[in-house]
Length: 393
Image 1: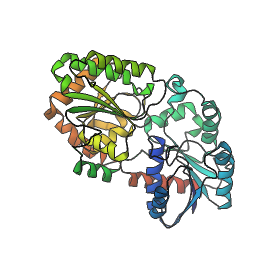
Image 2: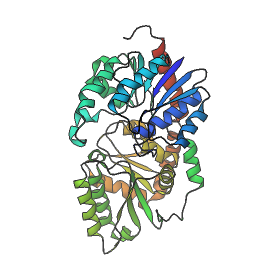
Image 3: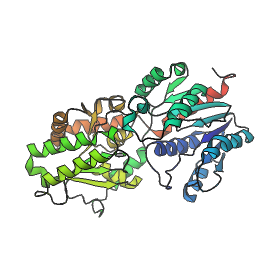
Image 4: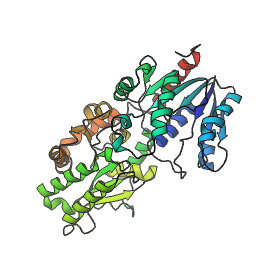
């Protein structure tokens, strides 16, 4: 079988590994190539993908052909017109799109992964200028797709509510966690990092800074924790790792307010914004953190929860979206609006570490159930199923 893969989100626009869709695309494509067996792959790659990563992709499978983009930037025409033509000329049997959309001019069988549909229910959480994608590209892709992969049961439920025609062709395949990287992080935690001076306990938030992540309430809860335990102001830091997103005003204002309130006890700020981090830095932070605080209003999956569990770090997560589904019984859950409950959960993790020992052990076992290798095999089954259908449903 000849499988086309739209890998235009294999990296961020600046060439870095990126997060979210980029992280998923790289991880699932790598695992698919390694698990592909006799299948041939024709992989479209973005302009910013480095030579190192191109060579790595070719090393994952002897049966992969890379299709680099034309020009220095990926344009609407190159993705939605030229790319389908190149797949057609390669006589591909089925197209897999990891990023929720199928190129407009593709007319063959296809499988598309849906990660999140929150923009349909809460457009105020997202940047403007996405009308074409929300109103045309995504609905058209879901209608034409032979099979649809939802990354969680929660995402599948929303998908069927918003797009009822997908009900008969959806399969749930969760995201995975890089267990090998997690084990390496545990062995090689860099206690002497200059960028991350681990001179005190840290509460970690990991992800893009945007309204949906509920950082304002996270900062409020951390402030309430310090008010209840003022002696901890010089012992604990809330570390925010991730790139700046959109609609940042309220988040930045609350961060400044809390740091000003505690500047006498901690002149450098009780909340520290690190900005984007590399994969190695991410795992180093996760392995060193006293807990991960992930209080999102909604998540289609919530990969940082699994990644924290994979290194035995306790997780405080929201009760919303797919987070309870992902964390199972191995996380502490709080209503994202309840800052007092969030503050109390922080107290349990930071002040009674022996009380979360069982949670750490459960988290390690939970994360071990989600590997990219396993998810790639399940994804490949869906692709094979789609390719065998004689006519689109």
